[in-house]
Image (cartoon, rainbow, N blue to C red; front, side, top):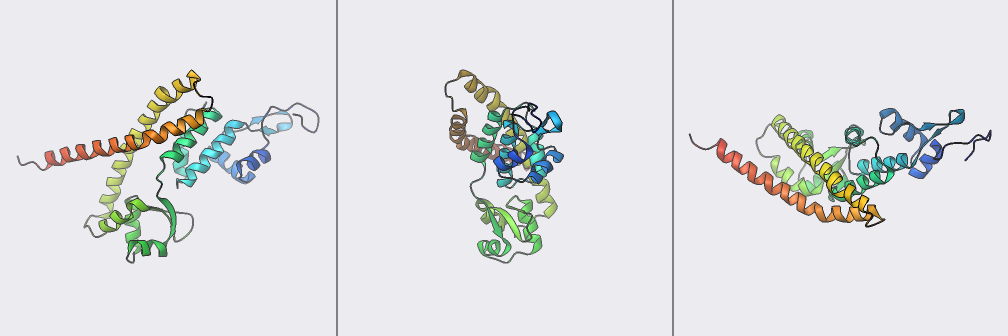
Length: 245
């Protein structure tokens, strides 16, 4: 590949080509670069930046994370935890896992529709409490939310429970911290003990499809194991805390 002067350019895409292939704007690509979400391009002759397959795969992963309702700040934290030398194939696997493990009930909903589904009017404080419980989160549009429908009924019932808002926030922080720690350890085990050996064995040239299928089979087992372990642990802790001296 050559530029206008005939000088050879490293293989890859210009910023315009990358944006077109990823289905985003050039401005978005540059913005992700300034936020550190996208590694800088390789600079060739005449200061022309060239982007590779890894950049394209990373853009696809960012798009998937946004589709699951993650904020840019959360995406930054997620990407920071990934090894810096992941190949395009590895990034594609991460995208497949994110898609297959995401809550299927997540949806975008207006305030009016939210109240209809909840069966009651919701004050601003009610909405804040639902967000604190992880039932919904605000989007960039006013009056539009990202809702986990599977939690709505329970969340609405909890609105009438006399628990302070700060207590709900503190409880959610504890749960998220421990859930994130467990998720990171499970992801590491999957990467080191399942994905890497499988890819090195060369059993299936279509690694992405194989890993996505394996992940789909693992999901209900892992989720049920986590729920059961949490229920048993919480039951034991409550019995211990309220046991008479």
